[in-house]
Amino acid sequence: MAQMATADRLTGLRARPGLLERIDVPRRVMFVAAASMIAIVALLMGFIAWQGIQLFVKDGVSVGQILSTTWQPDPENGATNYGLLPFITATVLVTAVALLISTPLSVGLALFLSEVAPQWARAIVQPALEIFVGIPSVVWGWLGITTLVPFLAHTFHDPISLSLPIVGQVFSMPGFFFGYSWLAGSLVLSIMVLPTITSVSYDAFRAVPQELRTGSLALGTTRWQMIRHLLLPAALSGVLTAVVLGMTRAAGEALAVQMVIGNAPIMPEAITQPLTTLTSQITLDMGNTTFGSPWQDALWTMSLVLLIISVTSVVLVRVINKRRLGA
Amino acid sequence: MNTGDEMPTTVAYPEPVLRPIEVTTSQAGADEFAARTQDVKISTDRVSILYGEKVAVRDVSLTIQERSIMALIGPSGSGKSTFLRCFNRMNDLIPGASVKGEVCLDGENVMETDVSVVELRRRVGMVFQRPNPFPMSIFENVAYGPRRRGQNDRRKLDELVETSLKRAALWDEVKDDLRRKSGLALSGGQQQRLCIARAIAIKPEIILMDEPASALDPIATARIEDLILDLKKEFTIVIVTHNMQQAARISDQTAFFYIGELVEFGATRKIFTNPSQKRTEDYVSGRFG
Image (cartoon, rainbow over all chains, first blue to last red; front, top):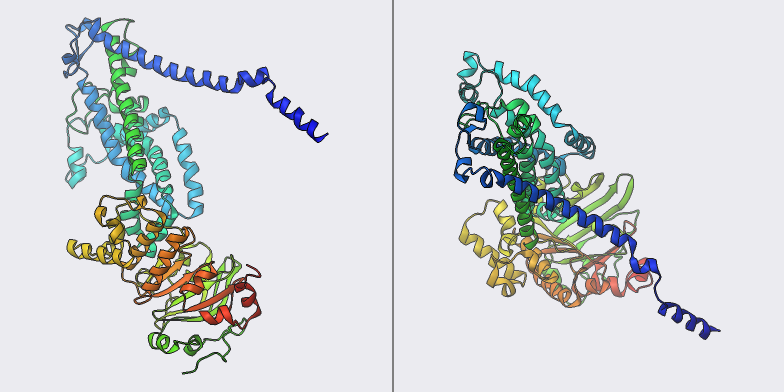
């Protein structure tokens, strides 16, 4: 009997697998989903790239011209000139100042949460950060218009404030009549990227093994020495990743920036000037253009520049992380 | 000098007694041992350690001689590692842990609130169960402690790193790429010797070792044991081990812990051959644990 059972089982194993087993439906479903995701992204990038080069191919604008500083896209106002340099420069500068303000705050907050904060504080701040991320950008823009812009326009303009060291110098710069400015844009952005940088660097700090912390403290170092000389270097690539992600978010933000930046297509000279970034100019102009016009093609070219910026950032994050794994 | 064989060597709860030094010198060769270990380096008086309400260590009193090896043995959960961490106050880092009683280092109670924990840990180094090299070069690993004490002189650091690595029997294996190779790129046994070198580099008086060989293979373990025996010439060593052969091989004194209590402590030979407590005998003869 026992032998019979063994024989049966062997026959069973050798039997042809059933139809469902051979097709392996879940695997196919997942494959199709993944493949279409990749296809959508590839098509999107291809489409933007194609549209982005039309300005050069179809409209015969030279590549040199988009690096000029004059933005005159409307043929009704005379000869056109599609200089994108003011937008590119403004995007870089507004993002840079936003990161300069936000990075120390965010990394400090992440360090506080990961190394200092008691459990209950962590339990409050972490969900707060998540809510923070979920606040729509129009709300930030609205807050900027109603509180930040008037504040910048009306406060610190008295003679006493203007005689103060840094504050006085900033507020006596040209262009600060209405408060709509590079500074306003950077301040709004710095608040918007704060949760991103904080949570990604927080994860980087938590990823450093606890044993290293105790190892350092057991050598008679203070907690600050441990943070400064062990934790920060160990988490550096993670923190850089956080900053790059924050940079991508800041460079790509359109609405909130457009609401506070003043939208003047000029080359940046002072932090108090109204400017326009790539994103804010696209949102501003897209309603005014006709399909296929050189003006619209120029907007596509601006989208392409943005796409290049974000792809570069993603590649940058990859390189940083690969180096971390290699070490 | 009393040979000590007749003397009771138990410290049984609930009457904690500070043992006289003579207790530990019970064997042939006692004279040499006694000559070397005249001074009490560490003594604890009724140390209890609690995690919240839970008592992890209860009323432990013992003494450790200078330049000797004290092994703390006992089954898992007997509180030996917890007890070890009170010597450099690493229990301070565990939320909810509290320590009662006195831990004296050269007669000074380190549990006092005005004791600088940073200074204490510079005198009492520690090596952990799992090797924990820092993610930096071998050189920087060893120089980490001295640098944090303000030692930035390049030549002095070079010298210190070299002597520490030699002391930890690692120099010959790593001297060619001290600055290029990461501490993480070493083998487990090498990593543990690196951690010992790192602890030596801050010139401590005492080195605490929390099962330093339990994550290593037998050959690496043998090297670490040789190293520990060698380090005894300079340092007072307290080692936690769950490996009784290891305790028997390297330690001068052994303390047996059971469920948070110190059952007895004394000369290692005595604990392993002629313990005065039934529980000790059962444990060292492998009847439980």
